Length: 64
Image 1: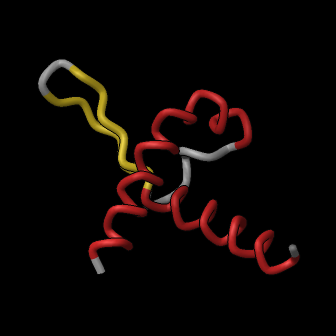
Image 2: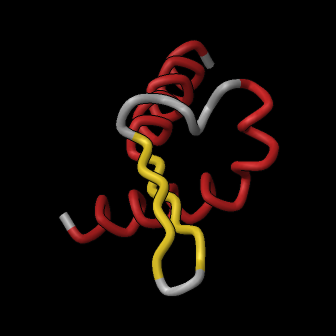
């Protein structure tokens, strides 16, 4: 269970870093993606984008 938590956390960090590139394709505006401003900084939690990209990666891995 800890392994999946670490993988999910790493996926969220990776997607957060790639958001400027992914926003060109419509990711980041899905229902379930949260953006808010706190402590003078913009925070982004891409839950729905993580699920969609995970499904895409799973489909690609099954084909290969």
